[in-house]
Image (cartoon, rainbow, N blue to C red; front, side, top):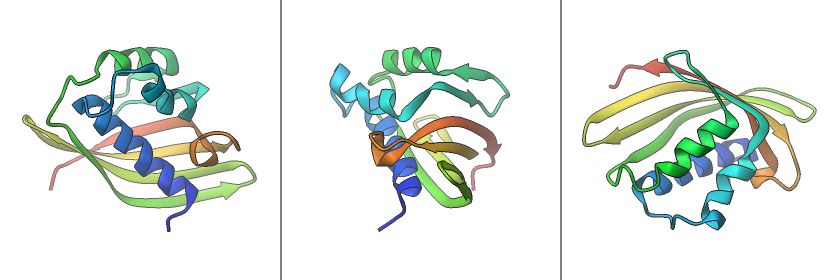
Length: 134
């Protein structure tokens, strides 16, 4: 069995795949998975350098339900880089594929331990960098 940080990375991305493909129902209950995972101060730095805060990210994701029925997302090479007290930092490759092709990104995530969050962790920050597809 994997560690909580690794399970959280895999499970949240599995949610993204189900949500974007429309496999999850478009309900508040289903969407709660991502709401509880992202800290109120969450920020994503996208591969092209754009900063996206939690609320606009959640709004765009909510509106994208079922927008990419053929979307496939998977994680490779997860690795814990740092852990001290309630903070954990991990890296992983995120790969996405749909009708338009495949792309990858190397991501770094900062987690904070929160007992009632999914897998006991909330996402504080993610920074992504493009990878070339194999």
